[in-house]
Amino acid sequence: MSDIAEATRGRLRRLNLVMVLPPVAVGGVLTVALDAGSWWDAVVLGLGVAAALVAFVSWAAGGLARVAVPCLAVTAGVWLFGALVAGSGKAVFGLSIVGPLAVPRLRRHRGAAAVALVAYVAVVGATRFLITDDDPRDVLIRYVIVPAGVTAIVTGLMFPNKRFYDVVHELEESRRREAELAVVRERMRFASDLHDIQGHTLHVVKLKVALAQKLVHRDPGRAEQELREIHSLVGDTIAQTKELVYAQRRLNLPAELENAKNLFEAAGIEVHIRSTADADSRTGELLGQVLRETTTNILRHAQARDVQITLSESGITITNDGAPDKPLPELSGLGVLEQRVAANGGRLTVDQKDGRFLTAAVFPPPGPEAQETR
Image 1 (cartoon, helix red, strand yellow):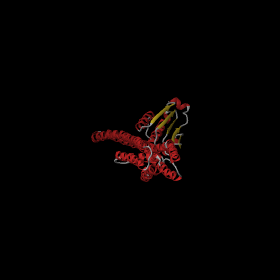
Image 2 (cartoon, rainbow, N blue to C red):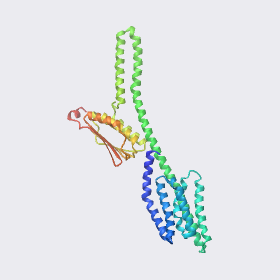
Image 3 (spheres, rainbow, N blue to C red):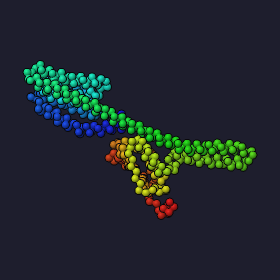
Image 4 (cartoon, rainbow, N blue to C red):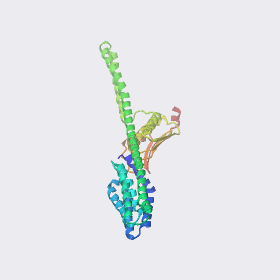
C-alpha cells in the first residue's frame, strides 16, 4: 500500500473509532446489563461484546484477518448460549457485528457466506422452540426474525461500505500515479530544454563545418572565421548545458508559475496563487528556480491537497499541507538553491510544522537605481 493510501486509511480509522466505537461499546454494555440473569450469563455475554469490540478495532486498523476466525467462533458460541441457555435474544449482538465485518472482506463466495451467516443466526434462534413453552410468536420474533433481520441488514450495509474503502484506495492510488506522471513530465521538460540547447547548436555546427570544408582551399580566411564561430558556439552550448544541469539557466517566472499550477492540478492538488506585485527582474530567475524545485519536492515527498503560492516584488512563499510526520529526506536541491540565494543577498528558509511545509525565498527590496532600470 502506498504512503498516500495508508494515510487516508489512517484518517478513516480514526474517524470510525471516534464516531462508531462508542455507540457499539455502549450498546454492548446495555445488552449485558439488560439480558444477563446471573453473573455467569454476564460473563458469557460479555465475551461476545468483547469479541465484537476487538473485531471492530481490528477492522478499522485494517487487521481484521488476524482476529476474524476466533472472534467469529466466540460470538457464534455466545449466540448459541444465549438462545439455548441464557434465554437472551440480544446475545446475537456480537455476531451481528463480527459477521458483517468479516463477510464482505472475503475474496470469494461473499454472497454465499452472507446467506450462511443469516441462516446460522435464524437456525440457532429457532432451536429455542425445542426448549421453551413460551408463546411461539414471541419466540419467533425475539429469536429468529429480529436477530436474523438485524444481521442481514447490517451485512447488507457493510458491502457498500467495503466498496467505499476500495474506491478511496483506488482514488488515492490514482492520485499517486498522477503525481508520478507530473514528475515524469518535469523530466521530459528538462529533456526538451536540453534538446533545445544542443539540437539547434549541433545543426548549426554541422552546416558551418560543411561550409568551412568548402572554403578551406578557396577562401582560407573565411574558413578560419567559420571555425572560430564554431568554437565559440560549442563553448556557449557547453556553458548553457552546465547551467541547465545545475538549474542555473534563465527561467521565466510567469511561465514557471503556470507550469507549477498545471503540474499540481494534474496531480489533483488545489492551487491558490496570490501575487501582490510583479517580481523584480533581478530576482525573478532565482524565484523561478525555487518554485521549480519546491514543486518537484511537493510532488515527490508530500501528500498535498492544497498548495498556496504568494509572490511579491522580491520574494516567494510556497506552503503545502500533507507533509509527513517524520522528517523529510534531505532536499539537496533546496540546499544548493539556499547557497545560491544567499550569494545574491537573499535568504531561503524551509519549515515543517503540524503537517504543513513552507518554503520561502526573500531578497532585499530593490534600491532606487534598480527601480529606475526596470
